[in-house]
Picture 1: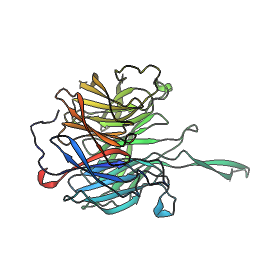
Picture 2: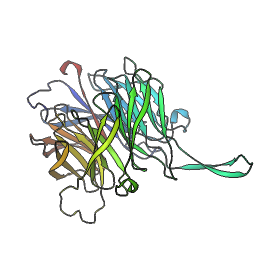
Picture 3: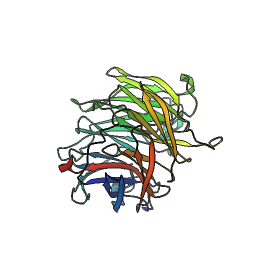
Picture 4: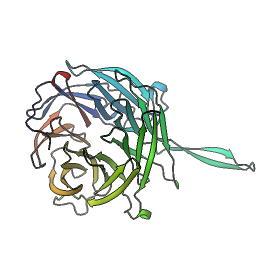
Length: 397
């Protein structure tokens, strides 16, 4: 694990994005601000701001003191209720954790689901979940015959440049992913590699993982590999790639499957990526027979020794030691909270914080030297805390 002798004596803020599926009822929307105690691993709720944002994903650029938030909605209120979601950049006030808007841009898609950094703070990536709704249009072919055309929302990954102060510029590249055989794509998450040049996007509906490269000179987003995980490539139905996480030192990333308890490792390099193994990550808990549960967030410890996976419906977290890149079960733990959706290790790696929108709380779990967890506290005050991001104030970094 990370160095447990290191102390964080300064102010640390925790931000939690509130997740709600409603675009008309703002209850639960916004960004929760907490003061984090690194000694006890506790988060003290301060307030919720920007309730006009459905903050489905957050990312902090610590060097610039900026919080980025994806506004996960189908329709942009800045455009009169049309045109997809938004991405915001906020300057963080180190005195009280307050947020001042620097910029907002279109997500160039519907339901922006995730944010990831690129290029040492030069770029920001987002992926759009896309909208399952469709419309029809009358068209004519080359013979003049009429026919019906079905139009879908674009499913996109977007590359934004960031300014010196962290503000977002207009996108320099947008990559669209098409429907195939009537199946609409759904980019559920995007994760950044430690090298700042590569990223992995999990596409749930078509069973694909896209391995991408950022061209820092030309400001372009290029697909290096498209990995397909479907019955025709030897994988179970409903494999549904959901969340990805990169190993901090090995050329590997991992992704879990939403509907079945599987973890897949992918080896990557400059030429592309290829899967190297898939493992059953069923949590070892009683009473699971016949229960249909789903996997949620995924994260890896700072030294690459342990991987954590959230399981919804059964409200649990499982712990896996990564031995030569392969997961070995260490622990499965029932949580007191309901609907665990997002998690983040604390800056010193001593605690795991989990957002549970179903029970309106953030749980704190102490991380032992062997990677195992013990629940120690909870924080209430925000309506639906889900995704989590930390900010350590500059004087104490």
